[in-house]
Image (cartoon, rainbow, N blue to C red; front, side, top):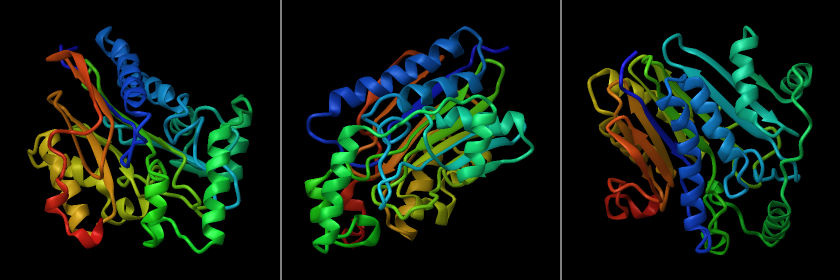
Length: 325
């Protein structure tokens, strides 16, 4: 056992409503502190990662678990994944419903099945078989937002992932703010990454994003781990989380790797995204190509930790092609 440990969490790349910043900051800090309390006592990264993500899944501010966004037809379909770096074991679920903690079901897939990814009805049968209780994650606020956005669609407005009408985002800045994640290094040297999301508002029923896809939304090896957030259709195209870990394997620090990978995504596909990372030295990194990405982190060298609404090293708007924003 060593003295090294680290944890970083994110609350999703996107835009914050003016009334929410301090509540969001408090939320990511609470999640980080929950995971940190496990790590400092010599606990395992798998437990710390799951516990931190569970906190965010329980906070309706974030687009994961309770408060997840709704599909075009008004359903709540959630994705989650978790990966253990030392063994490359991974568990993931996609398009699951009526569940409080998708991250815990993803862990169950990893530990209690021979599979990596279960989806839809099959995943739900697996959950009920294991005793996961039925739970309605849809909040009244999300239902009201869904009704308003559906009316916008009837009037001819389309969401940003369809590359139409930025006015929709101006009126609903929280629209693409979603996905939560955690990466943790424990004192045993284990690195674990986990991610949970409700997806993007008004997505087509059955849509699966980057979160449960190995190397896209989540990835971990003995050298590092990463959790991505943003518009999954772009993240999947570049395998963002894998790029971060691969860069760390080549010698980059967690921060250098996060910056390089997000810059590549920005240049190749231009869709907003962000990523958090931890390397085996206990260094954390985070980068985003979006207006904001709330993060909280702590390490053995910085145990008091910190919570931010945007990283100091985020890719600046003037570095980007305006046509892609």
